[in-house]
Length: 453
Image (cartoon, rainbow, N blue to C red; front, side, top):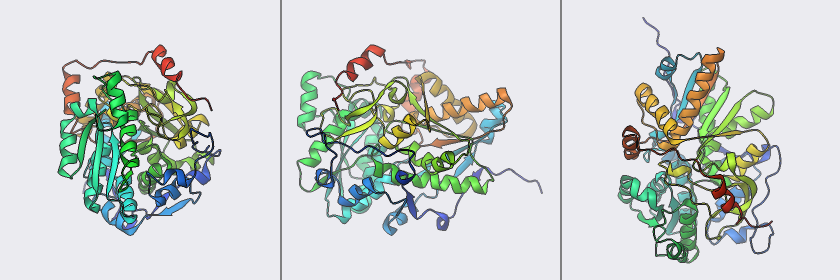
């Protein structure tokens, strides 16, 4: 009988992690607290209570290394988890590389990405505290889809402020949210003070995640039965995503592998952080692992931003958080990777970049789509434009291994499929994608508005 190399490494439902990993006790330096912009003092639970349920606030500041996943959340996770770890045999062959390439496939969830890992958890904790409606923003629509999916399962209403350019580029993401019962509005809207203020200055504003966050926070803060939910950046969001890395670690052990290189795309940081956090202590303890965060040159937060306190939103309604930022007034260009168009990044991720645990690089659109095309032609899966940034970095590392002859183990965080992004691929195939690199003077203009802390 002919022996075949394994393509998918799967875990049984019984092997699925039952606790999330909290990286805070294992950080190389303490995480600086968020600050009240009015007083400059660290914020307390009472400051966050109007927009978040208390259990999520506790998770935000917890120093417990492990936080148990509720049974009701695990039951829903089992609709698609554990997700497979694929060996990219066909891609390896096409590249002629001695590297072994794996990808952790989060595209198999019902909304098609990693986002429901936290959406389900957040909907659960809101339901437990009697919340009737959750307000949120979404960039490319992956997060809005995931929260709509989760709210539907827990009987909650869902309001989504979708960045206007993505609302126009990805109409079927809006349709998917509608199927799961969400109300979706193109942001900026005339429904909130924040949105009206932006439209007065720029009636044709394409929107941004910062603006959409302002609208969603305002909506939640002005309605007693509603809370706000964020799909990235915050500590508890990254915590929930660690189920990805915990599964990947088990699967790599089954394959007899230890990773040499971990790559993932970064917009706010949740998918990549959830993937690599479980490996950080190994690196700090001496294991050689290159951890690479990938972003677009059109929104180069980690590669060209500054490590400062800044607002998480455009209207200055959020606490100040220490992060790499391009400035909260930054409006990124209309690239197709809408989920990567955010001016800041998760404080936990930014700390690890600042300490040299994680490196960052930025790519232009066309090389990213070229890599995604090769991946689709070899592995058969159409990547989301965001995910394609990670694919590009993984391919570049594999090509480097071909040049050096190194047989490294490369693992890609495959955060979502691109079935709702085919218009972006049409633009690429027609040669209509612009390789945009954000001008230095525009970044400096936005950074001039940073608060003094």
